[in-house]
Image (cartoon, rainbow, N blue to C red; front, side, top):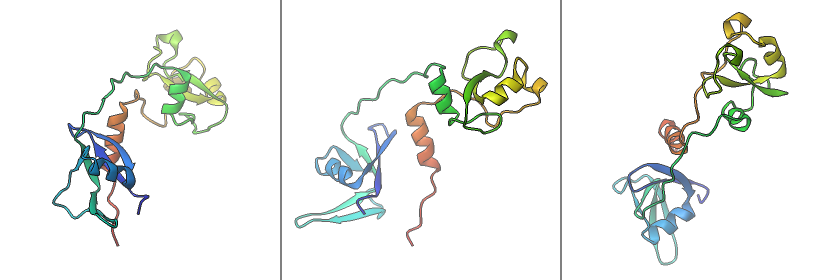
Length: 166
């Protein structure tokens, strides 16, 4: 049971992270957090010799949490590889990776998040100084800049399917 996780929300109800039940208990007992689903039976009952505590699946911090400002990271090799999950965006290979400009720079393409992709050496040389249409190639995924980590966590959190308790 102590392996289960609890979702922590900020004071203004932004999902921040997941913590284990032990950390959630500390936040609740020290009154740094409050349960979000107080009327619901969803959660876990934790028994100690002197205390019985209901630990909900969602808690909200009462204390101010420092919400950092976040900037879109620069377009560089490390960030592009991370965004593309270290795979070629043309064939799916994960070996001998390079960066490729979808619209070549010689044709006015910019070094931006929606124009730079991860490509293996073979696909990069096949495409060369051509556009996707001219080379007869397609991208496997739509290109986009990285999003704020809180938004990424929130998207993942809200799209999760609840597990049945059978």
